[in-house]
Image: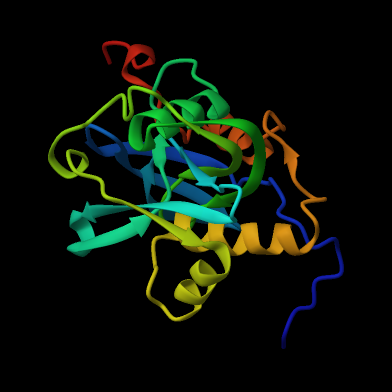
Length: 228
């Protein structure tokens, strides 16, 4: 028999009790952990990637074009078009400060108008990654260009400016598949259609991030990790 939900349709922070935790792998960026979780009368084991979280930026110019960067992604063996983005792996750096820094480092741009565009969870069945995507407008080139040329995959990051309507078509045609791009592009198009009226302030609270962190499921920057 199908169950019908009669409450509000919004995500609910209500964690089951964890009775055991084992770190199976501690990596340079994230950890892999096995948790023993009480669900009803039974304990089940769930594996998860403990992630630091990340931010992305939909940088939109005065012609409604957004910036996409072509970058190699090894796990899928593909060059993907995606917005500027970066990990929340710097000690005590806010999401907005991280986004501002990444926009300069990856694109050589600064923005004078910032809003929260969308928050989402990247594959919450297997990873604790929290993601905040910003909308950046009022763009201006930084005179010195990209401040960080990176190495390996980040050494060469070709840029493409794509009209928002065209980008929506590329997403729906399956030609752009990076989740930051797909979520951000569709959210930007929806927000524009609503006259940008629903945009949140750039420093808006991020409840799910705070909740996941309170559970001990955010990979902390090295300076906070101690010697253990």
